[in-house]
Image (cartoon, rainbow, N blue to C red; front, side, top):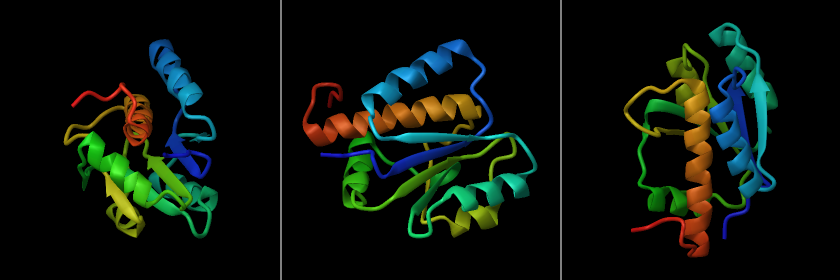
Length: 145
């Protein structure tokens, strides 16, 4: 079963849309232990530096971008189970995303879709997929095959 006490999401920018904020709050209640840290919009270099500073030295850094690895929900659940004993930090970029060198420096890159989403939507989608991964690992009814 997945536990999220070793997981963190670092996201650039604040959530401004109330309906997105409500969805994020709902999933965070369902994922106890998961931490979300917001970083103020800035230059790409400053955002990347701040993420590096907030990421534990032995953490697995996962950047979200459209060129990252795509998974089915079940595959993502399995990947997270394989990484279960690691500190995992998911990083969601701002309007300019991350530099290619920052993405390459990550332990792995995750694509939620080949489409590009605003950071608020990406955060909500990531939380939903983490919750889905948790229910898959528990054999719960949330995920239908």
